[in-house]
Structures are given as structure tokens and as C-alpha cells.
Image (cartoon, rainbow, N blue to C red; front, side, top):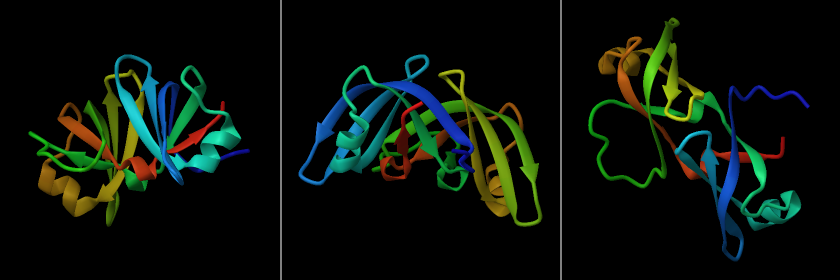
Length: 140
């Protein structure tokens, strides 16, 4: 199967917390970073997820937000610090590539206005933000 999702982060499940319908799955990426996914309990069972499972966390680039400076308290679980490696402006949208602490790269698709307002350029220190509900889990 081929996917259009740009962000594919390999990792290992470190915890699964099951609810009645939904579950949270914490994945340790290479390095010390973790990513949390909120997925259905059925998906956890279908994939056989448990601590130690090797997985790939998938995130569409349109679901990655970029923060600059101090990121205040908020409900977004996944806050991945990194450095901008590349910024490509289009007429309306901008693609921002961020090298995160795990050695991986995340791609964010944000509006050109937002990228300009934030002054994004290669070398800028940022935080990539992803809601746990926007993270999918796949088996490699």
C-alpha cells in the first residue's frame, strides 16, 4: 500500500491506555521523544498493540502546527521541539520541514501568511504541534 502521508515516524509502543471506545497509545520515537495517538480500542485490538510493538506513527502535513518561542499550556499532547531545515512558499500555502530531536523530519503545511508572521526560515527553533487525535498508527 502506498500512502500520501508525508510524516511517517518509526517507533516502539511504550504504553497503551484503553478506554471503553478510545485508547491512547504512547510511542517512543528514535531518541527520547514520544508521540501519543488517540485511536479506537478496536484498532488497538486489530493491530495487536502492546508495549514493545514496533509501529509507524502517521501524521498528515496539514495536521502539523508550528509554534515559535514559549508554547503555553494547551491540550495538544504532541509537542516536538526542532529546527526548521527548509521553507518552501507557494502562492497561498507554505511547506515547512522541521528536524526533530529524534533525528526524524516532520513536514508541516501551513498558510503562507502564518509562515511569514512567524518569520520562519531555515535554522529557526520551533515546536511542531500535533493533536493526538490526528496521529494514526500502522504496522511496518
